[in-house]
Image (tube, rainbow, N blue to C red; front, side, top):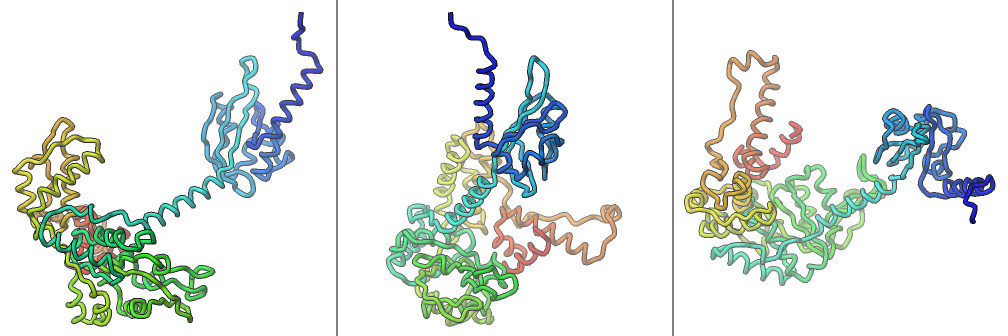
Length: 464
């Protein structure tokens, strides 16, 4: 009969084997006794944390922690495992993910074992992925002419002109109010052109502070100004080389930067900030504006020679109030879209609700209609199948008012200067209008009767 008793020799053999596995594994392992004192670590632990046996063995379990709470002490206190704890360990504050478990022998807790995974590389790769996603979002032109919905004659004329423009290298100027679909047109022109496999870069000229716009568009050389990155930086025109750059809200560019933009269009070259040598560039420019550029020229805010350059192929996109015959079609299109996004099965919109949509003046155009259909669906019960008038959110902007504090409320407020009070009310009202406009800043600026650039200034000033 085979003897299965464990001898001293095979106990030593098993112990030696376990020791080899413990030391060879790539995961860092740390073991403490029931008092929380270190009794074992493996080479992978030293490699990750930078701590040797003399730094840890016999020392309290917190000795290796640079940031966070000891999982060993938590295990010893609760007699339960800990999973997915994020800590920083060792002198180099290495980021690790820790799983720990109690060591129980014959029902008695005798210690805790922890396994550490180095997530520094994982975090680096995550950051690279995040940056790559940003680049993809910036370079990808998502829409084609098939994505432009509507049967209005003026809209179809704009689409026809845009298709012709796509077959040429000419600079295109898209003219239309905010929310009419200028960006979709820009995407579609790019995707129908010979540049469709190259980069598409969108620039909101109003959103970038004018002090930074020139360096963002054209890049800069190392040492061009205080704070310039070592080695300089590529500009957005450089990133779009070979492809298309979409300059949205071009009317907001200051006159100095306009001069450099004119050079790009005339000479097909850019000059970096702080540079002395021009760089040849091959970029198709699509510009867009919702302001009257000819009026801006009269006011000295826009260069006439630049206007002639960007106005080679003008395309006017009609407002929604000019194409009210498309409202029913668009509402049903957005209804189908939101059914898919929200997992709903809404069948249509009734005549009263549709009539209210038709009677509205639509300052936010198609974008506002999309928002209102989406909000109406959210207002519906899961059992309701048709959008009714009561489901539509309140969107008569002219009827909205902000409540100014009453005399009673003033007495309960802390004292402040008149300037502080003015700033507070201004900030609250801007937030109020932005909510009404679903954060459409161009529409909000119109309601507030200030320039878009001034609105961005106030948003920054109030930290909104």
